[in-house]
Length: 165
Image 1 (cartoon, rainbow, N blue to C red):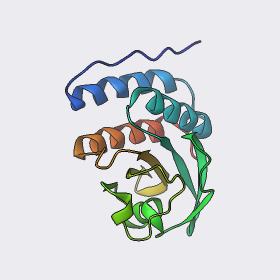
Image 2 (spheres, one colour):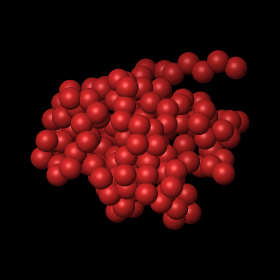
Image 3 (tube, rainbow, N blue to C red):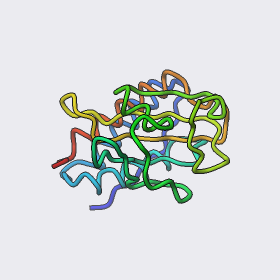
């Protein structure tokens, strides 16, 4: 079966993310493999969400370290310590982090020098952190609270659709 993402034309971000969530549910329907679902989730987000230069996943492979997973964009940092950079901080704090200017974030890890803003959403399953969904943009202040809420919803769909064992 072939999935064809449909262009989303909404001026309202909430409506945009609601429709994108429906498309993601359809894309992941019937597939339980976490890697496959993360790959398709990052591809769909990259295709549909404007002004991104990197979108992908880091998986928590030990209590101390994230390892890069499926992504769209330039080659990425492979390992990030928990508590380090935006991704590691989101794991440590167990909450999303929205950064308007990455150069102002203490300890930011610059995998792509073109990135200016970042949004990192933890992947949570029954209170356990599995990793993060990471989005970078070359535009300062690209992300807002509506983007954060929308991406949290997409991350939850990916987690719910997948077997993480």
